[in-house]
Image (cartoon, rainbow, N blue to C red; front, top):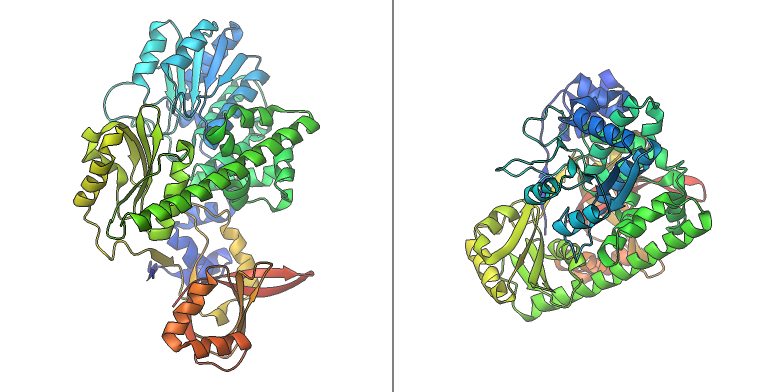
Length: 578
């Protein structure tokens, strides 16, 4: 079971609510997200484009745009080197589209995930040099490519870097200009921009210097929002405004390729939100870079023929369906290995799946982490040994632990919550042994923690309050959906619904005797099994028939407004229970 923890930050929530015309519960949620002070609260609730930071604050942004404009005037060839994930694709699109509109001779090359790996490399540099390219412009990569950039410079090329990853601790980047808010001597206030946002900020300056209107640059905000959400950047401060504005624009997008993908995914444009970026549209863009080439997704964004765009969008959806199928097979195989090879006592899971496609190892690792709530590394066979991709839990710093056995790797990198490496196949068993010997995680640290915003009785919830929660959107990392808890609820009746009978609907009674409509989308067998152990099978069967029963439960829930045949009613989605 999970450990429920109430976020217990203190403030005058009543006073904040009165000042900003919001409920004290809403004020408390905002405070829980780290938004403190009148100015920050105002920006959180009502922030607009005018509240974004000046792009000129980015170190080297003026130098980089001046160099680009000089190359455009001289009709020199510019090549963008992007990345194969959503952030890299969106950044590549923003830069190429903007440079074309400025009259540049510009092309894009995106590394192949398997053949090239991440970022700019010697092969791509040699290819560009052979093509007569004068200037290389990176996006979503380049900050760590010291040797590659030095090689390009030795060939007489100009190298411009736009990136958002952490710079290496040692050594200088020899690029002609580097735009990255994470540079230690960069004064830009928001260090958490994604690669597409850095590219967009650069374009804002470029457009300003070429006399274009701000609105023309703002057309790219839908791409910035898409990338910010899918690259799992924090939705706080400036990022939250970027995503809010981007969602507003994508709902009325004029991009033919984007419209085709939205239609093919069966979405109504006016309903698109962060969920659809992360779990519907985004995976289709990413599938091209995982199983084929990310150039296909980039080409879709440049298409102007509706029929061709529809076909291209369909191909991406088919690729994503294939990716989902491969992922499910990989997850099942990982579970089988877990059961068969005695992983129950491992606190760090190192699971070798030689036949799994290396591009989906990280997704599988994430799914297995959710299943067992342990740090997970999924390893797959590659051309020169084994590649691994890991996903962690909050209490385990993956990168630090890899550093402790770095002699096992050809290459490795990452951060506390995710990491990757390559190594010899013969060292797989040693890695599993070393990581578990070094692991200091306690049983409590391995328990998933559910952070509750407010222990709020369901009786307090109203339609008006749930509507007010829309002010908290968009939701995502750092601005999670609000979570509430209540206890001593009784079940009047519960029954299975849905085509596959895999959803549980409940009629409950609150502590004050109020009837409450609830729904549970999780594992119903586990739900019924838990309460059968606690109260007896007879009581669960009675609840299933709508008879009087002795079941009393506590729930973690989210209140939603359910619409059925144009009728609205309050519904409570149960997320956890005991």
